[in-house]
Picture (tube, helix red, strand yellow):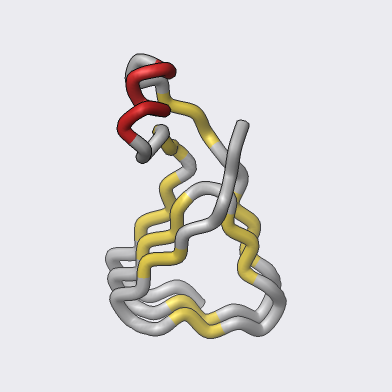
Length: 70
């Protein structure tokens, strides 16, 4: 089940100052995997590089950030 106002965002960019300069603001995409029987509360943001396992619950307003490097 997925609540209202959930954002699933596969686009990413470097967050460190030097890395941003080196990549000149380039963006990349990363995978998101959501297992079966999950409950994702309202206004959750799921970012690239995340795997949410089978049966997980994500609380209202959470930001779920994975570690993804292209």
